[in-house]
Length: 199
Image 1 (spheres, rainbow, N blue to C red):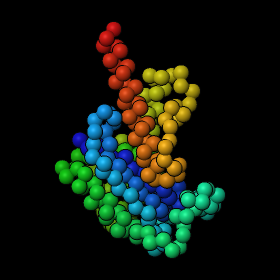
Image 2 (image 1 turned 90 degrees about the vertical axis):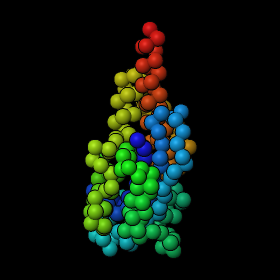
Image 3 (image 1 turned 180 degrees about the vertical axis):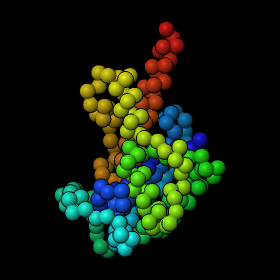
């Protein structure tokens, strides 16, 4: 079974939000298990999203305008970003190449944001379904928080346990953080199980 973490950056919080960045990376929940350095990353042309009727939210755009310069740079009109349809097509190819047998676990922070937006984009832009089986969608946020809350209850803020090395509010940086969170929770589960067996 192959595992891929995915993250989007968008210009709205709605299920049909305009997408401006997509990042994905293959990983294994057990960090000791090595996997290929298999990544996907595309900056998406927001104009192409507008042409497909995807949602733009004034408050979200204003929030982006107050972020650091390197984040605001993604709105540079002279960038040669990828049209949304082509970006989704490339993502489909990445998924098929990563798991030719179709058995790919797709993880994200929650299942009601990134996954919901991707499903909407695939249907509205390509007239297709997200090429991942419903039963293979995984919620990294719930997995991490529930395992830490049960197995490490002394942690007052579980999110502080995972140090971020990448840039916040970038799809690539968020993918790396989410992978670390899932692997931390898995390590915690395994170490607790081993301790119980040794008793």
